[in-house]
Image 1 (tube, one colour):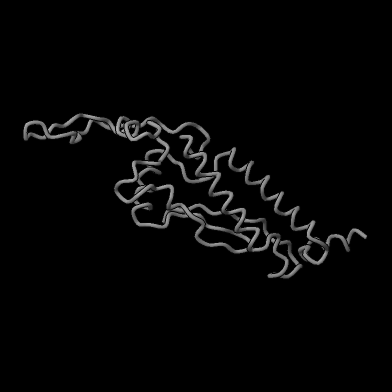
Image 2 (cartoon, one colour):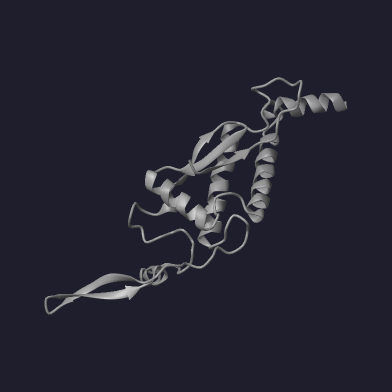
Length: 183
């Protein structure tokens, strides 16, 4: 399976388990959706998981049916980049194809599972997984680029702060324990 995972920080020893998760499941779900959207936005710009532009589209010319002229089929020779341009899309490796052959691959990238400590983002359809594995071999894209990590860290901090501002009863047990020790 082709997927990427977001993991929260480990719990500190001696504080038990279950209720002292740093994030609630809902907060982790929001963080996972934000992470998925961040990755898709980066890919749509043609940037790989290493933070650099993905290689240009390759491929020889393929013959495309254009029209019938006097009962004979007329074909044109076009590259994949040319077909994408003609369809009104960016002629670069942004992993958002023409929508034929199983739909757009990036539409299949979804949050698959969420727990308070982790979330998995993966492709949902067999066609999407197949396309993703092939494209990952050509130019790695699934994962977190340095700019993604910074954006996700900022979002995680924001979500954590919003949980703390919810009141003392909604504070995770681990934070309350630290406050007792400091007093």
